[in-house]
Image 1 (tube, rainbow, N blue to C red):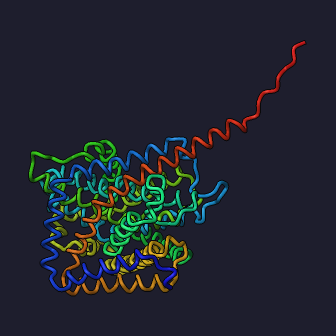
Image 2: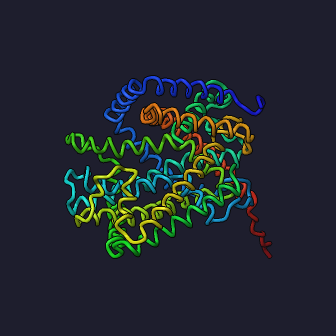
Image 3: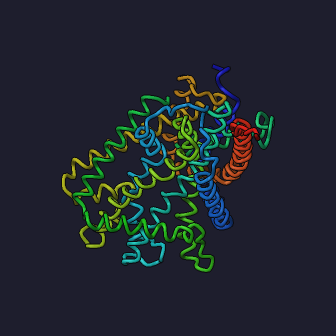
Length: 466
């Protein structure tokens, strides 16, 4: 077992144990320290988060239209391991599936009735902004973060035969230094973010397909039972508003309006940091299931399909909840975040059936995420092995359960989540370096391909003069 476990495993175990111990013994102290640190980062470096995530989006769009997009995440001629529908299901499930269930009604309601981006709640403008900003937070920017990390790992692992480690993606920049303390530090940050934030094959495939089937049934039912015309009108209008205002929203900081700036810190900046902190886990998982696809196919699939599904989900459940709130039928905004969806469902037909179906969906999403996380953690602490031992995965499963149990009991879970978000600061720098490293390697490979095509191109036969 020692041969299968890297030093990263033991380093992260010590760091995690120290953080959990602090959270268990003195949760208020850890909460205060992490809250202060998080507030300082959002107040002082909010601009940095907006710029860096926009760079990720721009880089993905550039690769889609670039000739580089034809390069495969694997060997030439290699076929994708998973079919298209199963691949989409796994992207959706691992990326943000369980979050959609909890926030499907909660975030639109929050933007509409509790704290609006425009500053005025329960107005027609607040209704429009609610869905538009929910799309923004769960849309292109979030998936661009995941896509960049996943693309770097998949390219170097499946194209260049490098270990499936975050540090391995920086080899073109750092050379052999990735095998030293710098590489170990990078991998430790990635693993720690995964531990405090959350076997790939048929099991994950079947679970993901089950998720999509259950989610599809629930969505179709609510689309019919809910305010159907309002849902589809809002869905269509909000997509237009999202596309039309995406640049303005991407760089919105409101420096001269403290109230709006506080909203941006609490929502947009928080989300960007949260997605970055999750990106080692989700990125490695997406990379693992995307072998054999071209860069262009990969990026279009990762950026577009999950966004459309997420937008439709939020339109159906968010508009259904906001409609109840707007008409005064039920005060959804008065409920806790994790019960808002159930509160909204209780005012539509077949409440018991839909509530049970939602609970099953949450359970399956949770199992999928937990299974994915144990694989990723095992892989990252087993020298990037695509087949980490069951013992290593079981150890990480027990550790994750113990961390959650101890901190839920002591009240220190929120503080440790803050810690995961703080880890997003150094890891965002790592992602920027990954982009530079990836482009350097891709440009070099593309140049080699062009030269090979030039020499292989048949010459026109010379015609002898009479």
